[in-house]
Length: 353
Ligand code: MRU
Image: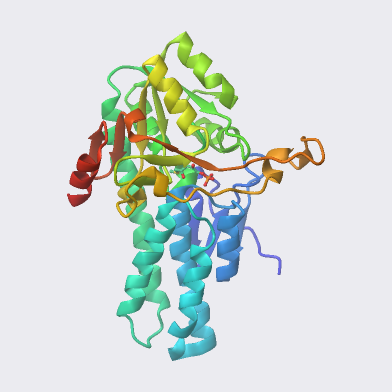
């Protein structure tokens, strides 16, 4: 069925929207050349949208999954009435199986599950919708807070490098790494942002540059391999990135290439800031070695923009995240506070607040 375009402003802050009783996602696979919202009406559609990168970025995946539970509950209520709970466990598993690395997905599903556990045979949709909307709102508030905290760490006007997209599009709104950059730019501390293009999905060129442009923040695109040379020339104060999962010792899983960027930053005396809400911290994994790293289809590397680039018959390895050891991170910035030179003890103190 053809769905008319919803009346939602096209802006990075509107990547995940509950509008007119429906879940809409701004399709991040086709940005920036096309701007389209997709309406999702089944839990399978929501799980596929996460798997297929219609929505991506750890906090945005969590918020979407929370609304996915609302969609699931509404359908279960329509089909099974008071026996709605019998269908919901499988739906939660469908959502949980969509992507493995971003812990925000599992964090959001756990939170929705706790509400489900408290409910009886009543229609679950209103209460679950309120919880999903709270998760969404809290994420935006956390990003604004950590954005300001991260900006305080930048002591003088400088240029920065970011990798992948940790902006409004990747969150409930405002962004994590780009939240820090937005807050810092507002007080005159950001001269220019260099955005790694981020092969193979090109989140840097397609999404980060688009977002920064929308905010009139000066941005220059880099091929991923140019970042170390740029640091060697000087003028870069910080590498600022987001995260998909932070282990109990402060190791950071983020988009493939972050580790290499952090190694280069260490060599050149450039500081590394990881900006993430505490929903990204997973105290149940001791170190980064325990974080499941998603590997996607080799075709994503062998093709670009729908065109085959690699020779036929050639294989490719496509891990989409890597782990940066805590020793290469200068600051982890969350809405609950900043951890400098992260360690297990400091992370435990943060999470006990
Ligand atoms: O594969 P993606 O696009 O979901 O990867 C996203 C990232 O690696 C982001 O840096 C991370 O999720 C933090 S988003 C605030």
